[in-house]
Image 1 (spheres, one colour):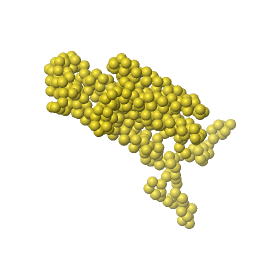
Image 2 (image 1 turned 45 degrees about the vertical axis):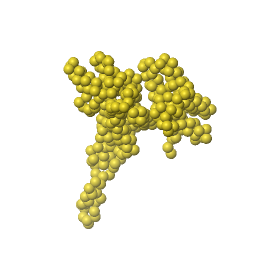
Image 3 (image 1 turned 90 degrees about the horizontal axis):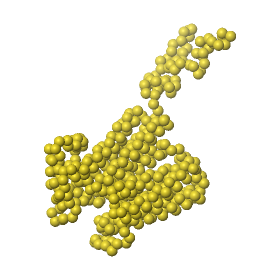
Image 4 (image 1 turned 180 degrees about the vertical axis):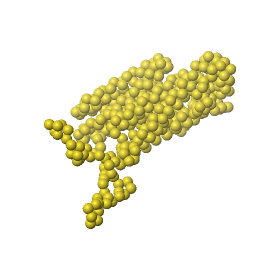
Length: 396
């Protein structure tokens, strides 16, 4: 009984499962005598993969584990949330006409806001030298200036938070070896786009600070630079959210039928329409008379406020129509429950957005309602990406 419960150590050591991880013994050379001479191993020659990992001191493999992928996916999901917050806060800053209150840009120096009365007076005097104060806000008081200054300050500080949320974890995951080769390229592109966003934001603000001696119009930033700033933020948001969904949500093995192919194409087109609608502007009344004021005609698409708002209305109607068609197409195909939920949520959000847009127009653009409408566009774009992720093709 003792031998059954406690087998000899020699027998245990002879088992292949419990053999210690030591360098493989070199074969004995036949020298014609009873003793043998071990042939030395070449440098780096080991018997198992585990020995290579132990010798290197790292034990990592070329591809990250599923647990590491989940961590990276959750990180990118949080990053996309911070970008959404920056877009919403930027929209509120624009609605309150606060974007030109800070007339200079310093990466570190401006992180500390004015604290004393003297510092606030100095900051206010800087603002008074630029066109927005001279033309629009010439009767502004210091307390009113503090409000718009803090609005722009919060937007810039949130932008710095977005940068830290991307760059610091990316460096940590890179060092830990949790990023695959393809993921490293994506993360580098995302971090580069974050830095580009900061520079593009200041480039946009500068266009509203320029003196125009022959013009008495209300100072505004360039619509081209504003569109570029918002568009790059939306690209950053979409790329981060798409990558996180690809890492976190398991793919459905759907039969590759013609109906599914059409549904997938329709989902991609709908997401593109939602993106363009979010980029295009605010709602406006139906077909106005001054639609083609500027010459050449193409300038009206980008510089005529009436035409730009009219384009937004057309894009909105087209997007809602596409979402509705997409929903009824999805009803004709047997899809997983999660995919059906994404399609239904997209339809509900689309019509909610229409209601918010019309209400914003009829109530003469109140800031809370307009900000909610802008936030709804991000929610609609997010669900469109979710549906695209549900319908994506499983790689062979």
